[in-house]
Image (tube, rainbow, N blue to C red):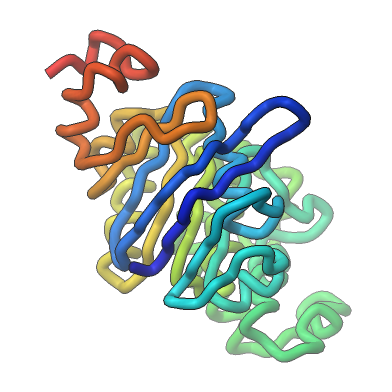
Length: 250
């Protein structure tokens, strides 16, 4: 397995946000994580990506115990992510945001080489432009803060991919996208998996999840209540009661 979570838990005061969750995610798949608002999905990926520390349990990545490591260390090891709320350097261009995202694989003075603008190596810039084009972003010199919301979400994905991850965590990437953009996102995820990437997808667009993921885990009140293939999840009475509703009844 590429990623293994064993009984990880996190409390905030008296609230058990994540309660003894086990996950085992194999390489080269899209793994879905769904559940109602407040189910603990973002808290769980914050634990995996080092933005929160687990209270108990263990996390292993690529065979190594990475429990408690800092986010930048996990990024260097191959874990990248986007966020539920867009976190871009809005005063920088789209190109500069991607260059910053690649700092984990570049030289130690990479951030310093971004200034003045255009000072980074040509190969880094060319790769950044290619990532932007792949995400459908044709204006590398546009300020990130001036992009439409859907474009900002795609820019976040490009920035995450710039670090050459083995595991990419996408937290509601389709938010603000129209159906055509969501369809392109689905095709991008499928292509990335064929190229060796593993993706953890948190998404409220259940049809996108069911049409993209090989396996899906469902959280409710911080606990994993089900895991299986999309047809198994859709057929689960517990999942339908907690989240999907009768629309997805088998």
